[in-house]
Image (cartoon, rainbow, N blue to C red; front, side):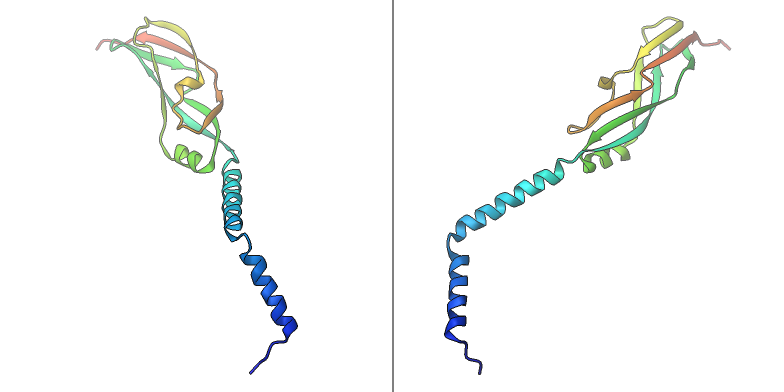
Amino acid sequence: MIHSSPQHRDKMSRLKESVSDNFSFKIVALFISLILWLSVVNKRDFITTKEFDIDILTAENLVVMAQTSDKLKVRVSGPQPLLKKFNEAPQIVAFDMTDKAPGFYDIDVSASKIDVPKGLKVLGLRPNTLRVEIIEKQKK
């Protein structure tokens, strides 16, 4: 059987006392520090670029003859889980030209046309302008 010395028992007693003193305050402080740590870790924003297909909508008797680009590159920042979800979803950007007559048009591409989940921010778009030629459909 091992007997502990009075000095050892005194150290153990002081250790137990220091741990149990203000125990509830220590637990609260631990939870606060964990919450702060998690909030700092999740605040880190990442950046990604995704290509969107471009769809030009025209009146039934018209068709798009030419356009400067059929893809739109969108640069987005935000938390990694939201970016992953954003990247997995197929995206199409549609421009309504149903009220336009045949001719050449410059379409300004703005961030408001891009559907991004709350928490993500559009940093940039390429191209910023699309040049489109609309003509009448050929009759058969």
